[in-house]
Amino acid sequence: MRVRSVPYRGFESITQPVPMGHEYCGIVEEVGSAVKNIKPGQFVVGSFFASDNTCPNCQFGYQSSCMHRESVGGAQAPLLRVPLADGTLLATLDIPSADLIPSLLTTSDVLGTGWFAADAANVKPGSTVAVIGDGAVGLLGVLSARQMGAERIIAMSRHEPRQKLAREFGATDIVTERGDEGVARIMDLTHGIGADSVLECVGTQESMLQAIHSTRKGGYVSYVGVPHGVELDGGELFFAHVHLHGSPAPVRRYLPELIDLVLKGQINPGKVFDLQLPLEQVAEGYRAMDERRAIKALLRPEGDSTDGKLDTEGS
Ligand SMILES: [Zn+2]
Image (cartoon, rainbow, N blue to C red; front, side, top):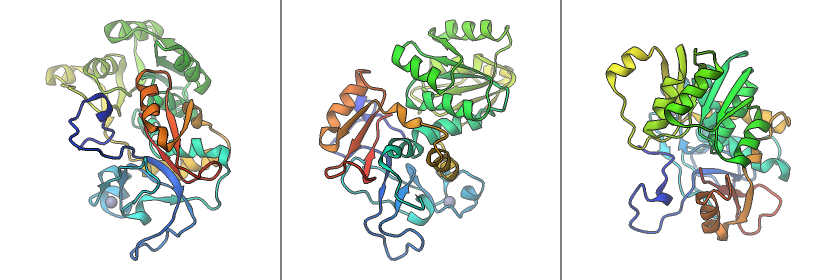
């Protein structure tokens, strides 16, 4: 199942109008009769897959492969129904202040996914990390690697505003080359060894091979970019000597820790939102991201100027 689908660019056929968006946070309006813990009036964050948070897969920390998972979509709307609310949603103790909303919103997907990318690539204190992809997920992969103590973080980007944000989030080096040239630059920067951890946050054949070829022997590649036409050769994998770990991020596993880091002011991932629009102007948000005028747009439903009732997407 494709999760972080990109119908906007025509990768999937759309036959009728559908609400977009799977990244959300907001105030609970109503709960179903089976919901025990989540209460109306609470501020909550959830993930793009609903999960019971109790089955074996959830217990292992892979809530995005919950045995009862359901997709959560259509979040760019005044109201959103979230299935399996007790397992899916995390409520904060208080209603957070308005300035924290963008950062809390990122925990729902782009930060949760960037964090998983760093965790799955085994980023540790002192690690040398390369991040392929300068979208919101890649940029927050940089932030995550920094939080996990990486010493050197090489961000691949050829886009000046994104390079700047990558540096702000902790990148120590910027590489503008792609493909084999990008691999060669990473090899130069790592004395011909390769990076300990490489985060693949794009999902193309070129970026996946770039990730595998940029990793040192025994190192780790994580892949969180939704694949478009990626095919790996068995012989090449056999001789690569790298660990591979990816898939849709189990964001729910990380929500308690990430929300805590945001509420304590230790991270400010909301900086990836460089455009805020009312929900009615959602089309302009997509245009701006598609034309690379914006990294990521945040949408606010009507009547929401300060508090948390909102939702968004666009990665
Ligand atoms: Zn489960």
